[in-house]
Image 1 (tube, rainbow, N blue to C red):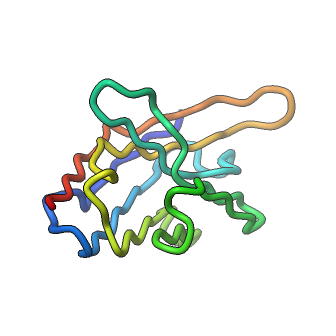
Image 2 (cartoon, helix red, strand yellow):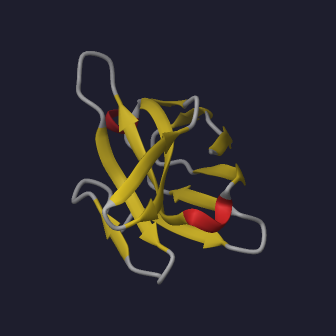
Length: 119
């Protein structure tokens, strides 16, 4: 089992910055990919950014050049630095971890943290 605890959400004005953190605990040795997803009211949950244990990153087109994902393997923590925030970035942000080995993977989710960007 993997437990994920997020922090760092809040209210910020458009153009501002926020940094989200997600600390993993439990069977962390089994984690390969960690990332962030978000869900705005009335919309489906969508990928924001992911980073594999090998260092490969993937970003949604809407956040490329503004958001940066990073991992501190020693602290078992993944971060999302969000710059140049826009009102459309407003959503609940969820940390995600994929653990296991092919073909037995398990998705784990954090409880979510609210990010609100005012115009």
